[in-house]
Structures are given as structure tokens and as C-alpha cells.
Length: 164
Image 1 (spheres, one colour):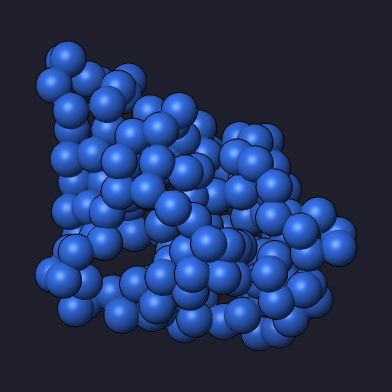
Image 2: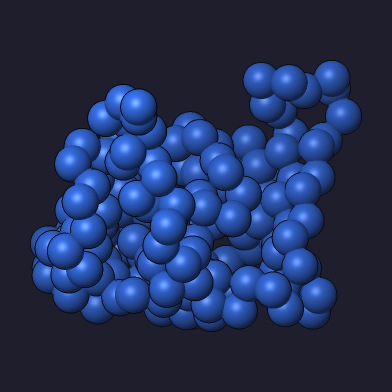
């Protein structure tokens, strides 16, 4: 017998990752939708903690703890520090070709937000659509819960209490 968390996880796992990432949030501005879709794509494909998501900088390290690089063949994350770090940077690469929707979502956000090398990848967006500084880790939890709730409404999925 599955507990509530296991039922929720099974329900979410049953969704196609590309379908979930490719679904644009409908209840928010296009700027928020692009940011949230990129956040979900990065978080899903790299299985990152909230603190790791908000610590990502583009192409080179700025004031974050990790670097996101998109190459011709891969999406790469290099962590300067992590919970399991031994002092050397930890690099994780995911093949680009197998994750087309995720790459498109991340690239669309980077272009829209005009993110430069060394800048934070995930940023705050005001209600007016203005892009601000680095996103806070607690905001990631709110965003993920809101997007999963939206997915449930749009697909009639039985997810009850998503938590991150």
C-alpha cells in the first residue's frame, strides 16, 4: 500500500518529463512562464536541491556556487561546492539531444532574461514582469508547488500535496 507521498510521486513520475517541461504555465505572464519552465527543466534533469538551483551562474562562476554551461552536445553543471564535495569541482553533464524540450526552455529563458556569463540563471520576476536579482531558495518551493497544482488542474491528475 502506498502512502500519500508515494502516490503523489508515482503520479508525477507517470507524466512525461518533456511534456511537463514543455507545458507553458498558463496562469502567469510569459516572463514568469519562461523562468518557471527553465527552473523545472534544470531541476528535473539534474535532480537539484532548491539551494543548488538558485546558486547557478551562466558559463562562468559569479557570486553563485555552480555554473551552467550549454554546449553543442550537452548541458553541464559544475559545482564549486556541494554536500558531497571533496574540494574538486563536481561536473555533471546531460546529453542535449535527449532533452530537447529542456534545452529549448532553458535557452529561451536565458535569451529573454538577457543573462550574461557570470550572472544568476534563475531570477526573481516582479508582478509587472521586470526581471530582478537571484531567486531565493524558498521561492523555488512556491514555484514548484504552483506549477504542479496547475498541471493537476490542466490534466485532472490526482496529485494531492506536492512538496519540495
